[in-house]
Length: 234
Image 1 (cartoon, helix red, strand yellow):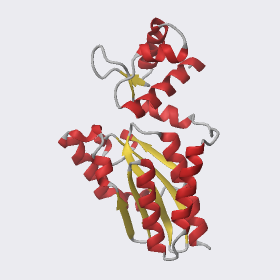
Image 2 (spheres, helix red, strand yellow):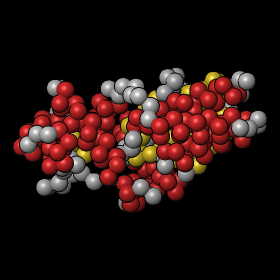
Image 3 (spheres, rainbow, N blue to C red):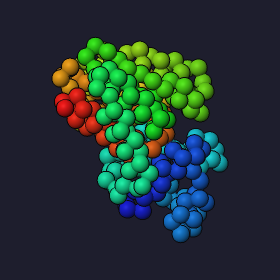
Image 4 (spheres, rainbow, N blue to C red):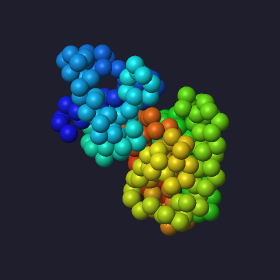
């Protein structure tokens, strides 16, 4: 894939996350300073290799799970913006503000919900903490009953699945159909494993639509896991 094709894919992922509607060639032509015909040719290639799709005739394009995976795998650590720093300071203050583990975990989950607008979740020992269902089901993706049922199935089976699979990476991202349960839910699970004196399988993370700001959410989830380790081992 050429660099321009990578950049166009990134733009489609990021624009779609922001506006929740297919991204057209005319918008990207302005962004890249080339003709709409050039963008359409590049989009045709990206569609051919399965990174984007056209949901309706005459519509723009949206990313596929494969396109999201390529985007996530190629994310680089960009320079933090003032908004990023403010979010991290708010997160750290909320997580370090309590001295009861359960309260600390709940505060961390609630803060992730506020900052990411996704559903927040955490496990500590045998307990599952969850908040933000209204955020999740308020997204335009979840207007049809079948998809809501798939999300519910994913949530019902999430805790036993985490115990069975026990992801070991500091940050794990499961996009759309990569989720072994609720694969048709159109969701992405972003979780961080953190060390805890209370359990060897402690996780914090978010569940949101595949259409989301991966860079920001991944950074916040990773930082939350780090902050919880610092607090719980203090």
